[in-house]
Figure 1 (cartoon, helix red, strand yellow):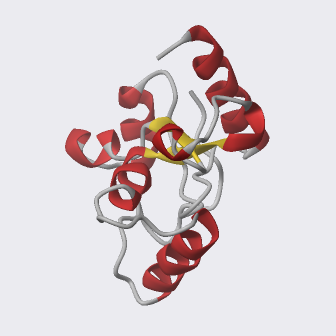
Figure 2: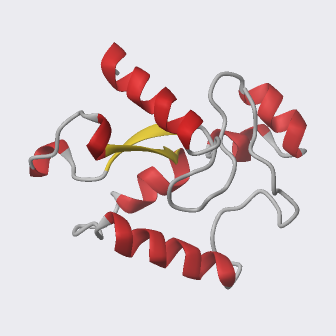
Length: 119
């Protein structure tokens, strides 16, 4: 990851209150151990909540590495969006994720997680 992309990711992480653009779950940037301890989860599950830089329009589709095209997303949402042969638009994917969460069918820490994670 370039320094520019890392800076944008960190800015988006802060602007989004440490929450994923798609699922609105807390993410970590820095220490997975702090996050794991704060959320009483397993190390394996905590890894899915690592903050990543998500391109709204992929570079292969003409997207750029600019602040307007990047959001902070958890590793689970970022990787899940790009698994399909025809990834959904960011808005459609966010709607799909939130709908699945309402039905209990998406990765989540727990229903009691309401505050953004730090560190």
